[in-house]
Image 1 (cartoon, helix red, strand yellow):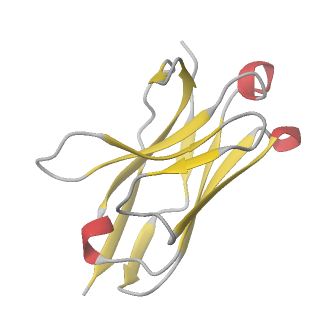
Image 2 (cartoon, one colour; image 1 turned 30 degrees about the vertical axis):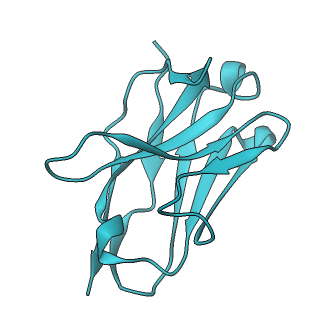
Length: 117
């Protein structure tokens, strides 16, 4: 199983910004699309941003225009830049590698993002 590690979460006021980072094993990182997911208390995990190896991005409607996803294959890292944060963005954020649109790596511990109003 592929192990991933997320970092960069924290507590921020509404309207603020955070940048999350995710690292994956170098041997597979550049071979797959990457996705950022989040899970709020009492809700199912949802995909919020997706980035292919060629740079094509896709975002959930709830974050479109506020979040940006990028990757650095040399550093086997994918970032999620989150701007204009809202209290409803509060969740644990996870990353994963994708195959046929589905996550195939092991879920890491995630990183907590809390947005205060």
